[in-house]
Image (tube, rainbow, N blue to C red):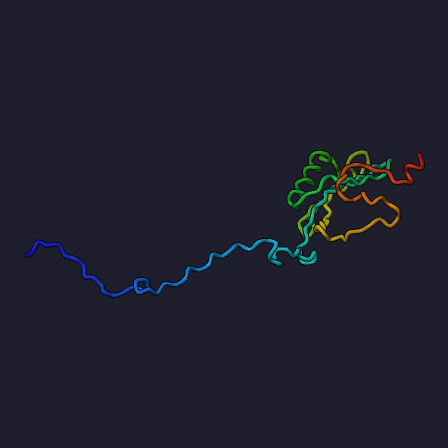
Length: 170
């Protein structure tokens, strides 16, 4: 027996690169810029966007001896939060009301009412659904009745301005 180490047989096949058959390196792909590709610059049409809704919790109160009052309690993004607000209002403010009715609309919104919430006051607590209009749904407009052009730009949001009629009346 021989004690020499065994070696693996050597292959005499030539590889493609050893034979000089080298392919060109592929070009590196560039990431598309937002301005070069019209697919990135086109805004979706307003009609193509799914509608978004908000849930407005309303409290209508009709006291026996004064004018009725309709109040927006709050605006919510989900029915669940609006429903919890209705329950909270009823539990905190009208827990001793009599002749109550409550129910649920087909879409899951709850409502509550009482013909006697105390001292003959009628109360309804319910949820209105309003669709939120997407940005750009209203075309740019100019004042047609002599209003100032700098109003409505959004820059002076929150500041109150008087019309010319109001200023002349003072």
